[in-house]
Length: 211
Image (tube, rainbow, N blue to C red; front, side):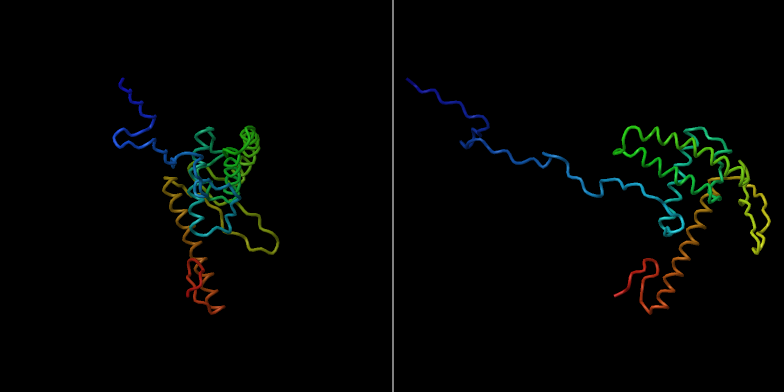
């Protein structure tokens, strides 16, 4: 009687007679590895007075994109959100705060009721924006500096005159470039003064002491 050969055990390689191979650990097994670079930065207050030139440009562009999305999404009129809002600090600070509030409300880790809270605050903000816009005098096709009240002992400010602006986007780019340039000049002047006062050899853009 001829013995019937046993079937190869599962996983055996019949060509070399070896037993079942052990599975190598799969690099894709287990939870994904997440680094700090993969986690979005937590929204934080933006102090426009203290931003570096680089951060100032970044914040201007980010806020402008969001404000443009906001006005189209909610159909906001110029009486609430005028095209030249960037020329008026009272509007910049208000819109910046609203933007940061929106980022926090729609953060993936936020609770489900945060969005309705943002919309409730958005209604209050629209009322304040109407007041700011009415007081500033800015319009859909022209702009002028917000009138300042002169206190006793102060020199009167320059006359306030309307300026017609035909291309809002082009004017915004020029405005941001001028803002960033002035901030960079202030930074360079500050670090140069440190170099003079402390007799330190520093890089003017970073403030790092040279070796």
